[in-house]
Image (cartoon, rainbow, N blue to C red; front, side, top):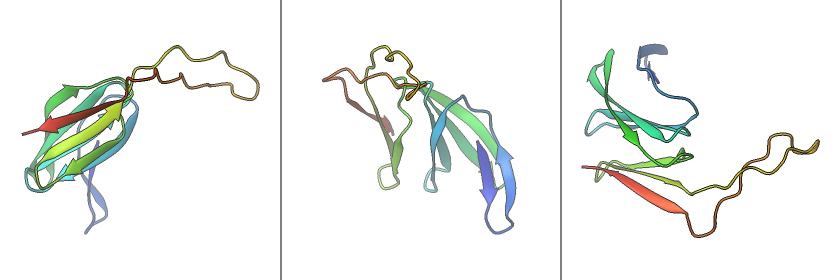
Length: 113
């Protein structure tokens, strides 16, 4: 995960994260940054100084829980996913098909203080 200083246009710091990042959020009230990943994790990093960031936690979520929202009023993050079946066979028209969601498995996950 990269942290940018928009005043200078330069990278202020980085921390390692997993694969398949979809969303990043920063909570200025807590100094925590979040990266949600399709591998079923959320990386949480703390801004120790304007140019120093440290990973403080890796949260396990459901695989595919990449879309994420942050409520800075209550310092909670929200993500969603579901259970998926096997992907259908590839076709010339759809060489990389997505697996279908299993009915009734949609899950909202809430993390925070």
